[in-house]
Length: 140
Image (cartoon, rainbow, N blue to C red):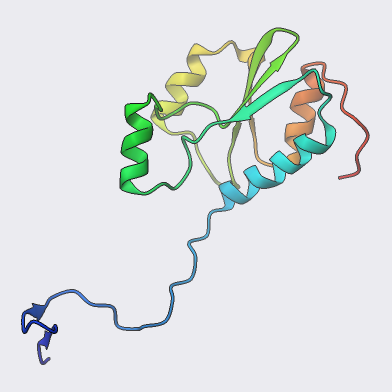
């Protein structure tokens, strides 16, 4: 194979074989989190506060290092809720996904009644109902 040279005459060792744009990487867990966030916006009563964690986000190297410097640690659950002054957590997993060692360690530190691992919007709904949240009417 003949070497390829750049405009300065230096050999190019790594190059893309195609100039076509790459297909976006499939991320079923991120798609699940977007669907759950939409569901929560529609159904949670205003007295329930919630947020998500960026721990599972696909960030660039510089963004990830900034988040780590600000205190983002691996293993924390994806969603956090404040329900009647108590904190509850939901870890979202796509089908076939398993807990990492960091997640297992964090989950062990949380009271078992305050955490749920969910694989669908229906399971998220069931966890919220189990925690006593009166959801606003919505059809799934």
